[in-house]
Image: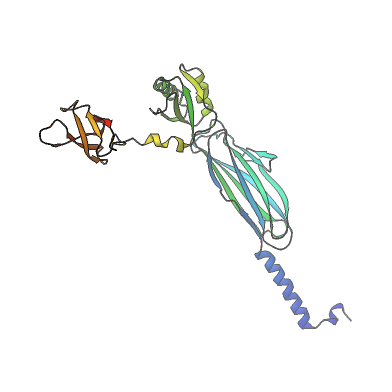
Length: 301
């Protein structure tokens, strides 16, 4: 009598089907890597932080081999190494290196893989680091997933403090120096409404700060990056007719009617012009002038 003699052929076949079904389900319910945002751009000497979710969608606990390696993309023949920090402990910066760790994830649960990517000082615009993460079940190589985190170097906008009324002189000096030394300065903004400050867009704010130390009338950069939203309103030219309303009393400051007073009859924002009616004219003839050729004397109630 054999051990299987107590079971019918139908029962044995049914048991085999159950085992095959469990194995098939185990393959279908596997491993998934997810990240809410896998592409970021950062200034040099700053960090991009990623929380990568390692998800085990099967009902059984799995040991998962996580392998991480690095790729650089740069116009330079020898790219400056980026620092990649993993699990808040391990660090890799050489593309020839890789990092492997086995993580146990319970069934229908997830673990977080924290990744910190630091852009190096001296990186060029568009330099890129790609962190490639592969996750594979230790017992089932078919159960796997992969994700790539892409971090790109970009310029930062920093505010530099200057002596009041010396903003343009400081900007001219910084621009001349940056051009001679190829410092990666992309633009310098000197907004008239802001006294005592200029804004510099550069790949290496630290170098800009060092230059400001030796620049007369400059007082160094303000710590931290300035948001582009804080300065973008300076980039759009302000209309001369802005603030002028129909019915306002104005004085003409240019043209053949210079010094004459008039009332605003119509405003043309598209052409930045206004139409006025002169007070001293015998017949009220409309006259069209540029918005910056008038001075408001009295606002319409």
